[in-house]
Length: 98
Image 1: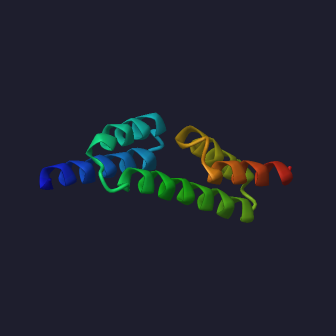
Image 2 (image 1 turned 120 degrees about the horizontal axis):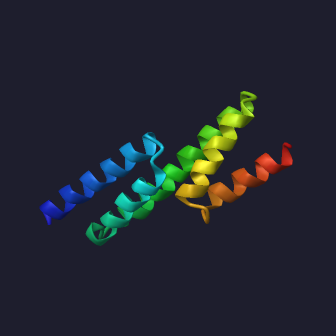
């Protein structure tokens, strides 16, 4: 069980690093690979947390008048989790501000 948890921790760390490098398909792959190791819902919590971080980042860019950067993060979020409520809300907010 300890080995499984360590492997899960490693997979989540890899996914986070790949996200920071904007290698979103690879990050999603690492997260999928981690699912069989997860018995506590950590993979889903990680996915939601990262979607929230992306949404907050895009909103900050938008507030600062950096629409292009906000749209870039929106596109990253779409590739990360297009069904997430964070993506849907952000997409709507950007559409309203056009």
